[in-house]
Image 1 (tube, rainbow, N blue to C red):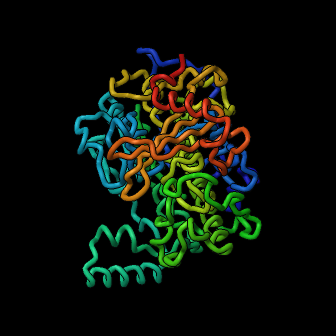
Image 2 (image 1 turned 90 degrees about the vertical axis):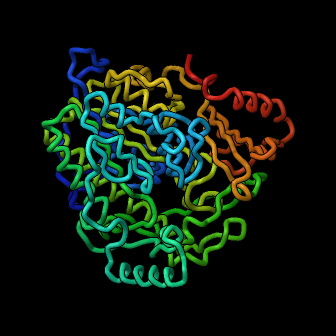
Image 3 (image 1 turned 180 degrees about the horizontal axis):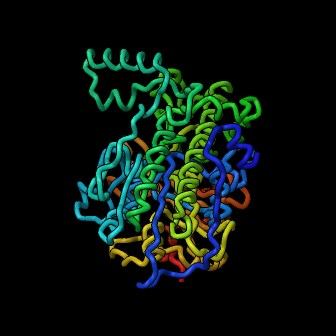
Length: 502
């Protein structure tokens, strides 16, 4: 389905794309400083048309990809919202931030850090945030030039029956002494919803409305750094019915590897807590004990894809406004997701592991005057690289705290030699006792698990993407792999500094 047909079917904004024809050059002191449109999507794995999917309908993102570069091997530093976003927005890795959970604000540990939007604010930009940029319950007002605008609709459910039932359940939980934090974390409504409604009756559509109005205002306040954080395709999978109608549930394939990786430690995979807090999925089994039913799995995948198409339409509305306002030619556009998401792979759902499916994320960048457009970049890049990249593109001085590498050389030569590895981590096991540190090379994913108490090596995982791209068999203990494991272990311990491009 092309973009014009998609717009006709979904009611999205009309087409009007104006690709830039300028040549790329780093801005000098006399140049007009570029704006930045910084678009985030929550839990979006790189399963889009521009990433090779024949099933997922994402025409607006695909159009952006044709105007910029698609980074096909972009990785987060920890596959969980708060650590991933904190790393991306501070340019520091989880070990340096000492941040590994959903509850800790990075400023509790590093009160004086300068974030990416804060640096732009301090450099004379009007810095505005809409929606989920930092982790939703841990905002950072100092990063913005003004208070974040309110999105005037409920965050999740539209159905009045669902919302009334939620209020009743929450009231009952309070009467029984459950805390507000417990209620927020574990007492959710249904995992899916598909009301016959306008886009802006759901939260992401209303957020796009706010973003379009804000862009019109910022036209007179350039340069600006406008960050828009969409909530989808994060659970619950709620979107207007017409986006569900783009897919036939019976045609959606289920995961080919709905089983635990052979030879992997059981603690390496996440449980299904992220699903089990939803009222229609409270009885689902743990991945070691079984899987969802086929009907449940198809419903969830259908909802996930519907939410991708829904948020794609909202991204298209914002980009169309950028064009109508004449801002595209001087605006850097970045689309990123905080991490990936499992849709039944490894017998599990959600994120929060060290596997490829959780750590690989969406990253598309379009810059004014870009020489290379519509190309896929296979180089290994990391979310911590975004901070120095945007600084260099805008001509801003880089803070000394940054632990990423500017990707600007890849804009000039996408096939040039680059990093030898990307690094991530996630703690698992009993009360998260074991820290797993992962490394992705051009061929292998290698993970070492160490006990946080005594530092001993507990387990290792090795997956050969040349022969096992889905990471189904751990070969770390396979005969004949001993020297390879030693070599990768040394490379992992050498860390990100040793992996930087020369």
